[in-house]
Image 1 (cartoon, helix red, strand yellow):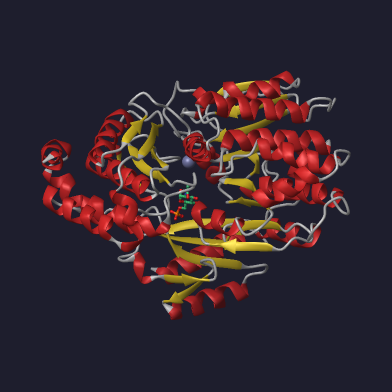
Image 2 (cartoon, rainbow, N blue to C red):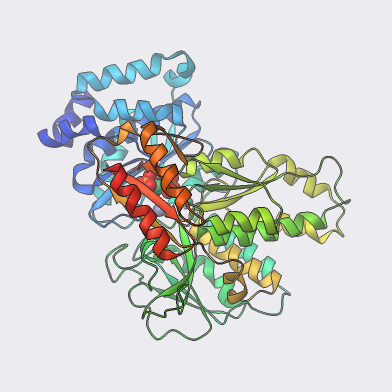
Length: 538
Ligand code: 16G
Ligand code: ZN
């Protein structure tokens, strides 16, 4: 009966029909915010069921469309381990969302509850943490999601006013389920105090000015509580795009990474500035230096980009040197270090990791859930997508071994301290901003030295609309197509003709398009290669 009553109010005819076609995608449901209330209600319901299936462990739900435009919104579901919803539950999410009547919805729910692996769903209890970003449609969607959580007989922690970055909510779910302090203030304290400990007694500071583009998103509200650790170390921190403009419009990590230009309002910057951009929900970060741009042509507003690849290389270099200090001090097998990238990682970054650092790189499919999953296989690992989403993971057994290393070994102590400022559940822009600053400080590197670690191979990304992108099936971390075979043959032929050529075609997991990525020795070569592949795809 409860379902039926909600059903009448939650969405209209057109919206209801369109729910059949919406897929969970790479990172949750996403589309125009005004059409998502029915989806939000059902996601709340599913998050509750998931919590009950996990014997009452908390799960989470974030209302955000991340780096996408302000009119979009989306629902990301957080699993009991603080990570993204388990892949096996994505199809349940789609079935619940697609249900066309309250009766059908009940049938779908019953089907989930009765599956043998979900036997404890019927148990009472269950709790869901909810939060949203700053988008105008967020309040109504949270209200619908809370109704869904309650319909599942679970407790909803959070209200229409609960604003969090996506990684904050992931972290809160994880901490709550570990029985550790999990309030927002605990998150701030942990990051800020951890960073201050790592910076104390270091003397020099890597940059005079750190300028943060908050993308007019939720990060603007949260950044001040953690970056004080950096300003206390002597760097002047300035927050820009703090909400006066439109979220992600001419600003934010996605804009800067794709357009390679300064975000709006970045004018008259002090000469020694290191800049960074968050995205709308602060799970991505890219750094940049105002300047000539890699082309050296110095177009006004161009930047030298320090993207996810360069952040990854900096962190991997630091972790490797920390681990080498442990040699002999730690009993048992040599700790394994994992470095995880996707096909979009610039070829120069992969060469730097493999050839300069001697690390082996694992490539996975696009999407954080895939990178995170691969990273879990190592004692210590770092993963990043070029677009700025990534984090560092320390396995519990490795942390335990570090704690047993004799006190005098600075390497072990330092690694333990680093583990305090990383978000172990998901990529976290604020945590990574602190980590980069700490590493530059410890390495005594300037931002220029970091930028000059390697030079990106020129690349080009294009999108192409096709009648049915599901016709394209990929393998080998999306670097090759299994189908259509003849298209892969053509791509191989085009790549072989381009000097330092590398290219791949994959269907987007977030938009109804196909993406084409190409690298070559020159920008013109990369552009040409991408263009010829696009013609072949069409
Ligand atoms: C989502 C993913 C991001 C990925 C992007 C790819 C998460 C939290 N976000 O934004 O990691 O890079 O999708 O989009 O997983 P695409 O499939 O359209 O290229
Ligand atoms: Zn995001």
